[in-house]
Length: 139
Image 1 (cartoon, rainbow, N blue to C red):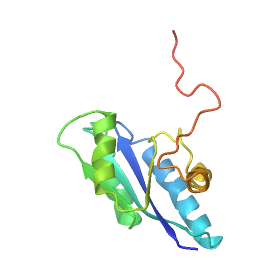
Image 2: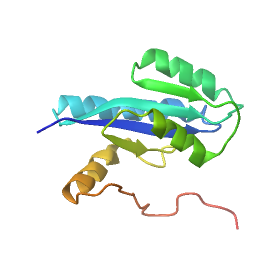
Image 3: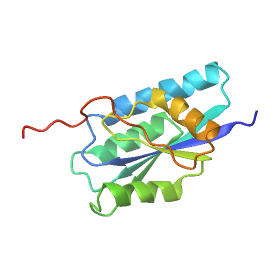
Image 4: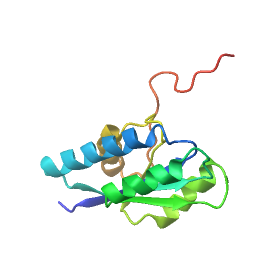
């Protein structure tokens, strides 16, 4: 079976507190795929800093030094989540692109299930559906 290269793309806005946990979870998943000899490789994780003012760019630079597969992109100003995601996708080189929120709303461990669904169903796009409320508001 041919190895599938996966790129993750994460738009970042005020993610300084959550980015280390996300990269750690991605690293664990990446190592597990290699250890289990799955035909999937996380070749890169692209993080698009969308004008953060909380030190996210500095955190991403540190993470990129620690993990060779972490690739930060810094936008000149805040353009919004969707333009930041598209900017990351345009820089991705994987066979598949997985978009992830910076707050671990999407768990890296679920990537395998999504890829399996895409490949077995011959789908071009696969979406995950949350089991409960994701972002709770007071109203």
